[in-house]
Picture: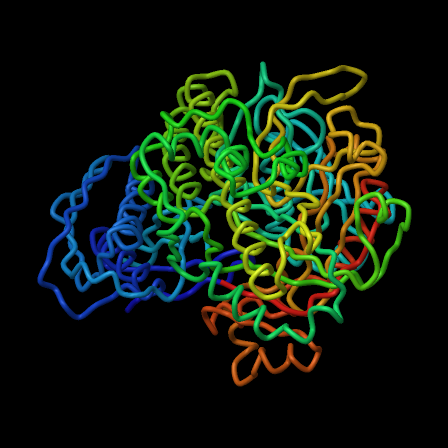
Length: 133
Length: 480
């Protein structure tokens, strides 16, 4: 999975990259689920995520926040993530997986906006996202 | 903004000079030992970033347990004028009213030691902890849950979970006025409802300490502290409800900041004028989450009292169990402050900091008027904790003090250093007995992940903000 952990004194961060901006959103979703221990091989069920934001960074945070909610509250465990629509202000995505409610590895309180920027470096989209643990 | 200009003012204070767009200076409480823990300038940059926000009164401050946060630094204190200033969800943090309470017992360590194993196991079993912990037995819903959000610890007393005497022992008597359950989203309610009466995970804990040193015998006697006494510390907050309230409102305030023409050096500092619709809505929701946290700590105190009754027999009153104090760490409160000779109504943000009223402050209940407000400063799992009290010098911090030791290592680095080690055994060799829901949490929370709390306490007492009443030594704990 193309992400690395960022050392952050209070919390944890993840640096995610992808050749496309859509891919970045997908990889960020899978990285978050990997950190939480919310990945599953089973993909019989679907959850649709729809969010609005003021720009792509806002959309990225809100997309991840929705996934965090589905994982923590609804017990959804994720096998696959994909985007159906991504504009500067709207996102519609889909998660494949299962509502298993299996135990999580860690509690992520929130996905933060701290110094978040989606940048294009050497033909790859990258973002560093700080999670409040 | 870069190129901070930092100078030492005295043995306990560093100043960050005002460089535009900062509207004021930064003031960091740090002795030489704390200064060495600050690392690179990221954390000081966060102090400087807060200084750019509109309506800030006095300096942007950081307590000696300061460390790198998101938006505000952890340990940050900032006051904003009610009329010209802002309120920022990121200045409070996700775990709204995360805090610590201290429950006194009439037991000495030699009374507890013969039953320690049973006590610790029972506490671990009776107080739900760990990732995603829920408490179905204490769950309430609908209108009753709204009463929790409105009344906080008062709800716990009304329902018979806590004695009336506990109320005066809470900051603001366990209820932040102005709570608005209607401003709390359905998602926040859904996240929080099953979690009332749970400890959670991460740095949250329940700990048995022994009074190891009485530094001020008069104040200790007045507060009910004595040598070798067993006390219980509980650290937890508003759980998923608070996390979601912060999430909901940071998002809304990004647009609000733009509409109000507020430039943000970091989006996590999203804010709105205190008196704006967005500001008032956030305050109402934040106060509701804070009240949830007060009730949560009272319910955990109820479970702890019940466990002591099971293990030692007799009522908790006969066991001398009473709340010494319960304080907030992550909060924004409307307080009257004095700055440059003027009385100002301000919204004081404390993120990883706590309130510290001095002796004689009329806002304190009678039981603390002579001693000053107790300031609870938990250390790490393997070293000391402290009970301080607010001192006259706290006026310069708008009556704020440190909240703990402050992290030194990232969780990732702590886990790396814990690899191949048996942290439980290391603690046991120091006569500290621990039970943890997760081995990973134990590694993340190992003692060297934190600053030495004694350096933090030396700084804050040396600066005249607090005075030391007693030192505590941990001997048993439950980690989430």
